[in-house]
Length: 114
Image: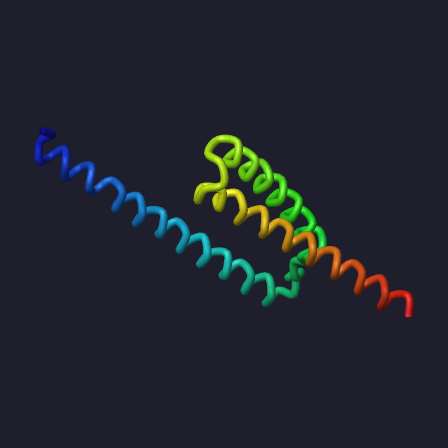
């Protein structure tokens, strides 16, 4: 049986880790906000761009590949049981991202042609 002091230390370590991680996140967000405010005041702020098409293609390919491998692994290992859901979830997310990318790409091309 571990001593009471060891149990207290083991209980306190995750709490300290969560508090310290929260502080780091808070100060990062605070200083990032201050930096953006100063850049806006000086007229040097450039709004970051986000390429939704590239993100959806990349995320779709990665999630589809990971989900496919997990589904195949769990089917071979245990057959069609509940652990297969661990692969079907990322597989369906990846396919959803790829379908979104395809629909967006086709709608963008058709609007460019007209």
